[in-house]
Image (cartoon, rainbow, N blue to C red; front, side, top):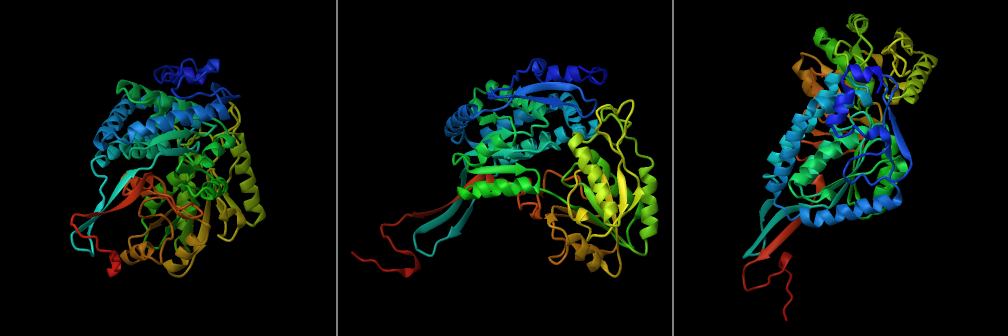
Length: 517
């Protein structure tokens, strides 16, 4: 263990999560049958090796699928409230292990410790939501046009749900899917990001303990590790009726095509190029807080991170000055130190993309307001720490049209009414999150109307990042159209069936068709 890990209690956290033997190259998670090449996890915090896991071979994958499909035949017949009880117990385990798991998330991914704890809290919250849902998997009843007939709809478990998650939320997104899928009667096979494999093994250890205590099949929750080739095993497997994938637009298009080719279902949570509109009636103090957290939280590596600030020309200079002044107060450093605001990017590849984006912005005519750059020296040995940057730009710049997973905020100007700002906000291929800062009721309602924001999430007087469990999460256009978490997102994990019951001695046909024998 590195000096950083020891001083911040990472070694103790790994022990509590059952990962104390991980550095010997073997992972201890149930259903982690990997026998392929080793995947090493290095912390972006200090560059130290956290541990290694074995990747999943095609033979390993087949064992996992056998375990999952076998478990499904038993799990689907368990009453939904009893399935909810298992999820409740999982949530209790997460409460007990919130601190060590939050530390691991922070150390392996690089987000602040407070954000790591917040991510585990999201897991706990979705468990609570799913427990209540387990008694509310409602169908519908409707009147039949034929006398003596009754019609209704019901929902049945779908089967094996494949989950492909990204590094930026290494545990929460998995829980969003699994908690709902489990109470729906599904079993899950999870491929976490190869950049955060330790978080995946830790979660598998926790749920494996719950399953064992309840004498339930291990195959209810399965773990596979590896790169995109391992993901392809799921996307092309007809035994996996639903694949939920979180990641880049490029990755999502590949997944969607592979799953669609076999007429499977896909739930896609892809890129975001999120904007906050700032109108003349905005509260500037609130705007600054929302914009700065949205832009630099998780070092700009959230799909809901604020990328663009669209400001009315009448208050442009005032907002620009307030935001740039706020950036001067940011503290960049070890995310386990709660005095810091910004931690590292996930790896040096991300750093290179950050640098290239800033170069491209300048080439296209952008003006750097807050200079970026890579930090070096004591505390920055990993090479993954960068300065949050602000660039004056235009929405038409190619680099502004793209999503750069880094703390770069583009300031854009609009004139005229709020329709001009909405047009700029909607003028990108992504459609995840959006926000408007205004105290004008008409502007707020215009933004939320059918001709307003075209994003899956539209907020008024809060930022673009930070979603609550109760609402469905997801976006439109090239964000993929998927919905996870709250509301009625559970329906994607089930198959709908329409039933008609005839309780008479006659057999009338629909639409009045006559067929006499």
